[in-house]
Image (cartoon, rainbow, N blue to C red):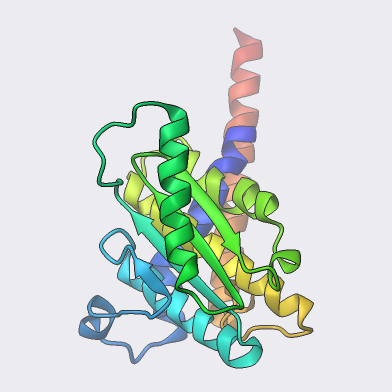
Amino acid sequence: MKTLFKNIGVLFALLITLTTFSFSDNNATPQLINNIDSRFLIEGKKLIDPRSVQKIDEIGNELFSKTGVNIYVYAKDFYPINEFESIKAKHTYIKGLEDDIVAKLDSPYVLLSMAVKEKHVNLLSSSDVSPMVDKDDILDNFIIPLLASKDKNTPYSKVSAAILNGYAEVADRVAEVKGLKLESSIGSGNTNFTSVWKVFMYFIVITGLLAYTYAVLRARKR
């Protein structure tokens, strides 16, 4: 059952990545989606599904217009060093790289930093935003489980889902502290998408429970 619910979490973010725009923007053309860009994406356009980039841009723009807070993403396939001398050297390099990035950002900001092959993910916030964002909670419950899940999805599908899921959660928390609710929030999608998603979730949960029950009964018969 534990594995089942982990997989449901992955399906949630992946389904949003693949279907949100079908329900929220019926006029979007494939060309627009394929060429989407965002000022909130410092690095990582080649790693993230264009539909996730589009949603990130939508959430980021609404949050900035209402609160002045920018949420940025820096995602690399790997760092330009083939091998580190030690774990300490690796951490020193990454810290220096992230320090250089945030030094160029205007406060208030949040930076989601990731390197796929190094299995590194981090959240950095300016001092005025840090109290609004529980770094460990967001990493442990909204980003890392999607990256670490054992399923048939490719690593880069997981990256798109994890970044979008984490980005949306950070935005929702900042908005909540400011007494706002984002219209672009994943949790406040339009009625059609929400209804379809609920049906899908019920189907997944019920199917999983039936499969689990069948497996238990079959094991007892043996």
